[in-house]
Each structure stands twice: as C-alpha cells, then as structure tokens.
Length: 288
Image (cartoon, rainbow, N blue to C red; front, side, top):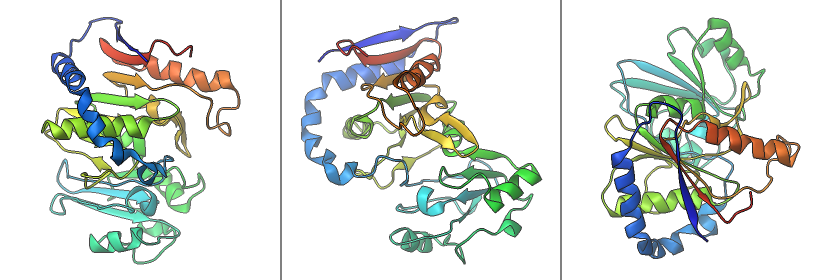
C-alpha cells in the first residue's frame, strides 16, 4: 500500500512548515508504531459511534457557562476536568448509569435529578452544546431556542475551540480511531503536546478529548455521521482541516446516506473543506 500526499491550493496559498516538519518526523519513526500494536485491539475499538466521550474543559473566559444535553453521552464514561474558577458546566439526561454517574459525581456535576427541566435553561447560559441523541423536540432545547441562546453541535464546538490551531482530521469509513491513536502515540512518544479528540479510550491518555489554549495542533477523528438533531451536516464537514487523511471509503450509515453515491459525496465535500494550501493524504491504489 502506498499513500499519496496532495496539496490543496485555491488562492493565497498557506505554507505549514511546522506541520510538514511533524509529518516528516512521523514518517522517519513509523517503525515505532509497531510498539503500539497491542493498544489497538477490540477493547478500544468496541464503540466507534461517538456515543462515548471524555472531556477536558479549561475556561477560555471568565464566567463561561455551558449546558450539555446527554452528559452521559458527551461527558461521562470519562474524566471531566474544568477550571471551576473560570467556568461552569452543567448537563441534563434522561438516564445516567455507571461508570458515567460515578464520574460525574466525583467532579461535582452530576445532575440532581434525571430528566429534562426547561426552567434551568436561562439567559445566563453562554452556550448550549447539543448531543446527537437529544431529539429535536427536547423541552430544554426548545427553551434554549426560544431564548435565542447560542447552540453548538459537538463538532461545531470543537471547531470553535481549535479554529486558530492547525487541525489534522482523520476521515474514512474504517480505521479512524486506530490511525488517530497511532498519531497521538507518536506525538506522545516525542513529547509533542497536541489537542485531540479520539473515539475510544486509549492507554496512556486520561481523556478522549483534550483542549487547551496553548497547543498549536489539534488531531481530530473525523466521523461522517450527522452532527446533531438540528444540524444534519456530517461531523467532519465542520472541522476545516489543514491536514486531512482518508483511510478508505466503504458505504456506511445507510440509514442516513441511502445510496453509495450520496455517501461518497460526503467525502468529496470533506475534501472541499480543506483549507487553502492544506494537505490531503490518501491511498493512491484505492480505486475509490
């Protein structure tokens, strides 16, 4: 198998010297990936649906308040860290089970009661982050819309927190978690700090999502499933990568993309979202 690297140029070409240096560093040390082979077994691949996230939150401004829908989906099964002196995180869900429940309780943000409570949605909330499994008629969502609050889908929020960074997005029907994991392990091996979002819990990493103010790069697992009940765009359309990789294409999510052609079109749109001067990595021997 050989991979082709293409530079995407539209206008005002942007060079990414630092990015290329990292890429060549990875290439020179690819043999080390064999060391991590045992970390990518079924235990870490069992959930590829983006239902389980770990969240690292660090406040970006004073008194930011976030309300999460489906915290057991987006916050639990995780270790939540946030700067309580600079922000406030709350959430709602209709059912919260362990290990989610214990972890939310440990961090002091377990909802007092399960269910949906529109009265707690107020103008004091700076942003709503909407999980994919909250329905469009969710009473808290309807209240947020009525109040005109800012509502982010999860991938939209990740983009907002990384829009001034170099974004590396791993797309494809299969292997996204494995490839993202390999990159993160190589970065970790070379003590290169990056932000990231990966769809499985990895050995050696505390969380599945890590956001900072200071890191220059973010590595994102780019899922083609829909962003939220009110944002029907595939998640990876929102990330606008500086570097994009497509592992391969095999028709998937047929409940959302009813034809093979419609599914392939999502990857064409993804490629079109690469920034000026960005890089696309793909297998040149793959007919797709």
